[in-house]
Length: 286
Image (cartoon, rainbow, N blue to C red; front, side):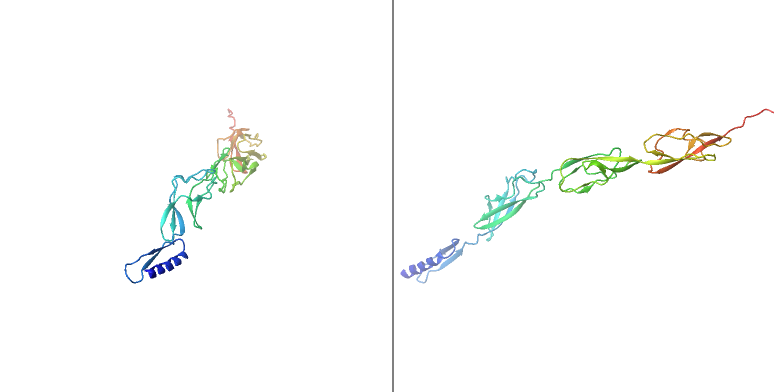
């Protein structure tokens, strides 16, 4: 029996140098031979990783809010594959959430080991409105009505019958700019107004069989103009008026008529032809 106690004493001394996590189980068999011992190591529960096994109740935020972990379950996994839920984790970047943030970092430390994981969230970028005054123009493709700090696009320029687009004013300044780009990093409400210049067109006068000359006149779209007084002459004919068809018997416009928008083409030319009617000679009695 003394021999057995001595061997147990030696074994106990050896156990002291094992880690605190090592558990030694001794089993004495009731026989004369040396007692048998079985060792079981319980020192492999080292932190390996953490995961979010249940998302928090709230995952959508506005910029400036703080992350709310209510309802979230975080589970730690150890090297011996044991798992258990933990609560004393920290959220390292959950205060005053900025625009565009897509996740927060969950950190947990145990026995000198640190593990992290990410919890997805959504913090949309603030949207700012854009308004437009097309001043009679139309767009082939609509321009955006809002933008955020990540937006990057160039405004589609409008068109307007009888006019040339000369640029946008408003949030881009008082001088018209033909090309306006919304670039990343901008913020605030914006307004843009289309600016136009009326097309210029010419009216030329054709004697259409008569004689004489008349000068070409310049006119502007959407501006009323007065046709010139006809100075052509045609022997044996009376002047009836003007027409764009040289073969017409009926004039479209009278002498010195007021006209507008004879063409929408910029620097277009409209040719007016004098319309004549033969003078019927008086009937004389023999």
